[in-house]
Amino acid sequence: MKVPLLDLKAQHDPIQQELLEAIAQVIQSQAFILGPDVPKLEERIASYCRAQFGIGVSSGSDALLVSLMALDVGPGDEVITTPYSFFATAGAVSRLGAKPVFADIDPLSYNLDPGKVKHKITSRTKAIIPVHLYGQCADMAPILALAARHSLAVVEDAAQAIGAEYRDGRRSCSMGTMGCLSFFPSKNLGAFGDGGMVITNDPKLAERIRVLRAHGSKPKYYHKLIGGNFRLDTLQAAVLNVKLNYLDGWTKRRRGNADQYRLLLKKSGLLERAGVVLPEAMYAGTSAVNDHIYNQFVLRVPNRDGLREFLKQEGIGTEVYYPVPFHLQECFRSLGYKEGDFPEAERAAKQTVALPIYPELTQETQREVVEKIKEFCKV
Ligand SMILES: *Cc1c(COP(=O)(O)O)cnc(C)c1O
Image (cartoon, rainbow, N blue to C red; front, side, top):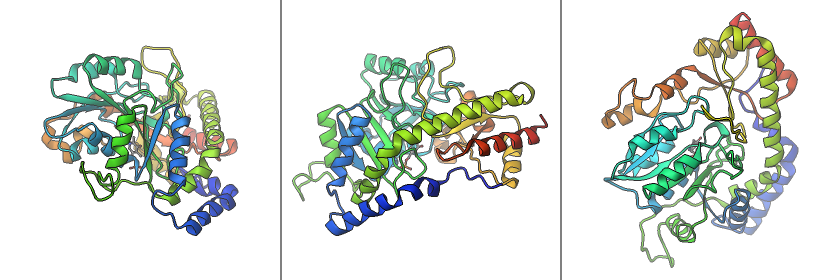
């Protein structure tokens, strides 16, 4: 059996003609830099997020970087975030000379625990970056309340959560000061390369980011700010304008696959007899349910590494997001953290594994994946 973690060919084959036509149109127009597909996509994605402004940028990482630049984050500033995310979340803070300050995660959602954030706020704190990990919004209400009380900016890292709804119905990227999206090919809306977007409801910040993404130049060759080259390619925007039409359908199928896994895993006996833990679309201690978009379907399992090796032998792709929390990364040694500082993040890094959940995955294949997990766990 061959089951990849992600199968983009299955996603692109049925719409190949449309994609090729969109690409051909850009070639015909020769408008490779900030051509009409870019503002079109910006408007459509902002509206998809139920927010006002979108600024297309070169990647999710650059979306985070330019958002923090727009807030003037720099040396002497602290930014509070999770220790359990993709590197870019904390990397953006350090690249600007500011200090990432970590707060532990909630064990159910794997997202920043607002109760832990509270204790990390100092007079130097400038912003909070909640990450909507795996496709589920972080618990924004208490985070936004804390931020308001201390006049802090909130930058949502929604790279894995385009369209995900928080328990009150608001969409990712529409709640904080800014929201950051990634169009890396493995995200729910993926380009044919790198791309990203900053979303905001603040017209001044939107304008500042627009200027910063082109070396701070406005008018051309006059620089009030020092920006960078953070532009989204027209070619990527053209591809994304086609793919956006299918996003809701793909998300629906990801949710269907998640439901199916849940059913199969509950029936399998793996939860009671092997200690497998399902992902939850809620936070510890609450019952309000979030609208999860399942960029990843992540289980906790005992002997995670053994299971991964076994599934690999069987041709089943899995991944670990992420094996080393930020506070234990070599490059952050100077921050002075040690093992044991964030027990929930450390536990998650040791116990979790992501199964294939892509939209085109069939129920039959999901059954086979669960059978193989049963075989390994001798259940
Ligand atoms: C993918 C990702 C990013 C970075 O996006 P790129 O487009 O790859 O630069 C940032 N944060 C999180 C949580 C991500 O998953």
